[in-house]
Length: 384
Image 1 (cartoon, rainbow, N blue to C red):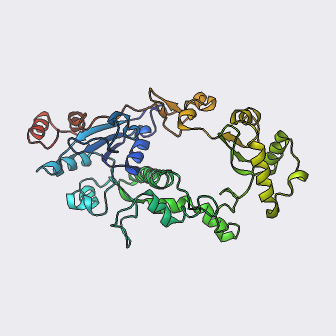
Image 2: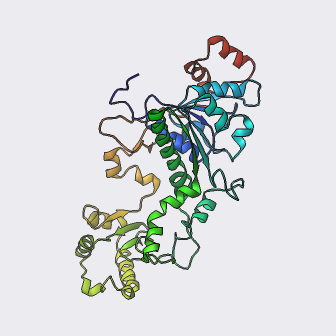
Image 3: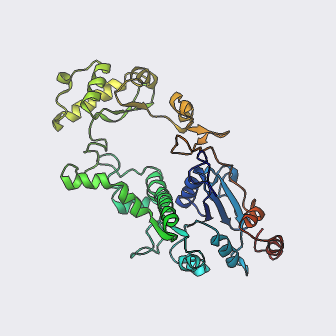
């Protein structure tokens, strides 16, 4: 069926998502945000994936249909396979081998649906010496080299929440792999299996750093390089009111703007190509920015090319004029809106997260189950 040009980019695609936590649901959110129909298979009576808070405020679960399926009941696996037969993709985030033991591994599923793109989200990958061991974001970014390079000199490495591993190196790479695989399937009729590992994706995100190391222009030393806080003109500074600001004047023309705004000269600060000037330069910037509150520096620098931004709390970010103008946050709870944006295709905020099993009947109906089959599945406790 032809898709309207203004429809979301992934409209018309159906993906089965086996409920999990972290990067898998984030990948599902990205696909749902772009218009894919996601049928999320959950355990009957499941609570919030995080184990706390209201289920309908789990923004990463937005835009789904929820089917509560008891995989321990006879007939449940066959029910799942019926759903998979009509799907374009599948997402699962269990340890290697779990789906195979359930009878829903990629070989079984792709035998029923050769064009299926089977997405697997793990930390370590489907193979390797530690593939079957437990881990979390912090462990994966540690093994990739990313954690070691993050933080201040002479202090423990600093981990950037779980943005770098779970969501950057994990969920986003799974979403990219799914879209790539489905594009291939649309062209060839043959799907594929996507082995998305957080350690792989995080290493890929480090490509520029590893490239600069190979060129001999990156030191294996924290806070000693261009983008890790080593340069005084690329860093975070505290203000008089306890707020913080960021300066990123890397290029000469932006450096010139910053100096002009601050009333400084290169003669006063020294040659920034000379590393021996950096400690004194950093001390001077620290002194200057500590002399006024954050709002003062925002008023002075924000509308210039000094490469400036205030450090905002999550509560402040939604209310910043630029973020308001672009509608970066929306809905009653000010959740992040779908990204990226398209000139023609529409990507509105998807529906709120469903409660487990809220759409069981609808999900079965749209997958071709008859009314009698659906009633039988409910009566046997296969779905709820």
